[in-house]
Amino acid sequence: MAVGKSALSAFTEWLTSYGDAWEQADPQLAGSLFAVGATLQDTPFSQLVRGRNAIREHLHDQFTDWEDATFTAQILGAGDTYGVAHYRIASPERAVDGVLLVALDDRGRSTSLRQWWHESRRLN
Image (tube, rainbow, N blue to C red; front, side):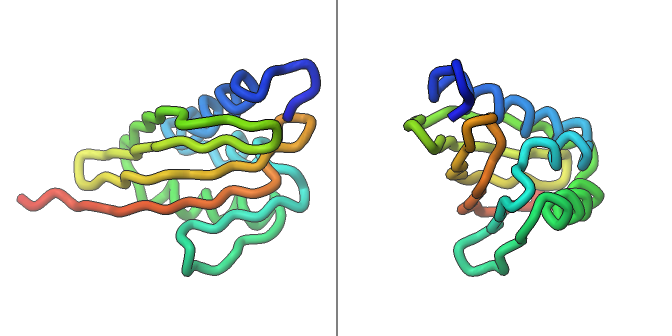
């Protein structure tokens, strides 16, 4: 966890910034939240994305698929090296509802992000 911060405050700060990145569709902000050697896995069966630059590109691709996204989250728990949250990303056309598990280094950057989610689309 980030030096000088409680586990909960460090995770809250990370999660808030991650949500801001989604709402602003800002891959640079999103990339800054990850350590150089970080990994991201969208779902338990998806390919592991390795490295800050690859994660930034991956999130850039995801952001371009969403228009007017809103991000909300509720922290479920935070330990010395991890945080767990329920999150929702929604737009007028669809929504993703899931859980994420984030491991944070001593600078408050993610070294690992794992997600489990379900997507629903609005029918017109």
